[in-house]
Image (cartoon, rainbow, N blue to C red):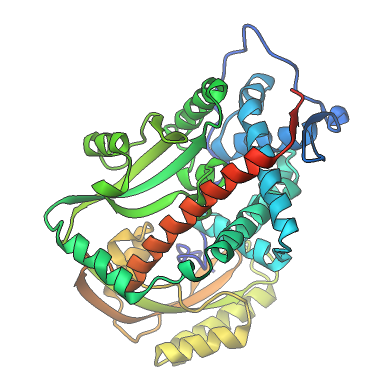
Length: 438
C-alpha cells in the first residue's frame, strides 16, 4: 500500500509537536534556586485558597512547554520558565475552584476530543502527542488538567453570559453594516498569545517569558501549540486565532505593529492593557473584496486496528483498504459518503466544514479539492491510522470580504466571552488567599 498525503482533520500529517531541533542554551552565570528533582516533587510552592501547588506541578508544566517549543530541557531553561509557569498555575487553580463551586464538569470524552483536535490542528497522527510526552518524562495528566480547566472555563463564561451569549440577527446585521462602511480599508488575519501582568513587580518575569516564547516561535515552534498552552486569553482554545479583525478592534499599538508587519511575521512583545501581546500576522485583505474558491466536502474514515507499516500491512489493514476502494467505486453522492462514515462508527465527523481551497496547506490535497469532479469519490487516502474517502459536494467562487451572519455572530460572542473572562478573573484574584512560597 502507498501512503498518500493526510486529509484535513481526519488524516494527519506527521510533522509537528516537539520535533523541532533543540537550540543550545548557554549556562546561567548566576543560577537561581534549583528546580525540584522528581524526588522533591511534593515541595509546596504555592497555596491557593487552601489548595496546594507542588514543585512537581510547576516542573511538569515547564517541561510541557519546553517540549512543545523545542527548548532543551536543561536546568537553566526550565528555571527561566518557572516564575511565569507558577503564576499561570495559580490562576488555573482559581479557575478550577470556581468550576467546582458552580458544579461544572468536563467529561473525559470532551478532553479526549480536545486532544484529538490539538493533534489534528498541529499535523500530528493520533496518539503521537501522548507518546512524545511520555518519551520526554512529562505526565499526560499535566496536559489533561490544563485542557479540563480551559474547556470548563469557556463553558462557565457562556453560562455567566446567559442570554447575552445569544447574538441576535440585528446585532450581526449592524456589524455587517459597519464593515461595509469600511470597504476599501485593510483588515488583518491575526493570532495572539496574551501574557498577563497582574502587578508591576511581575513585568520583568512576564517580559523574559515573552522573549523566550518569541525566540522559539521564530525558530519554528508551532504558534497554535504555544498559544494553547500559555496564552491567557480565551483565544487559547483556538490556538490563539483572532480571525479577521479591523483596526478599531485591536489596541492602537497592536494596530501600528500590524501595519508594519509582513505576512507570516511574529511581533516583539506589545504592551497592552493587562499584560503583553505577541501577535502573528497570517494575512491581509481589503474589506469588501476577497474572492476565494470555497468547497464543501464529505469524508468517510476507516480506522486501522493497529499502526500501519507501509512496507508490511496486516491482513486486517488490507481488508480496510478493500472496503475503502469499494466505497470509492460505488458512492454516487455526498449522502453515500455520510452514510458510510456513520456505518463505520469511527467517531469522526463526515463534514469538516466549508473549506477555503487556497488555505489548504497540503499541496496534494489542495489540488485534489480544486480539481476532482463534484460528486466523484476520491481514491483511498491512506495514513498510518486509517483510510479516508473524500467527495467534493460543491465548489463556488465567492466574495468573502463581508463575513457571513454566522461568522459575525461568532466574532461578537468571542468578544463578549473574552471580556467576561477577564472581569471574572480579576474578581477571583481579588478575593483569593494566595501564599506564594517561591
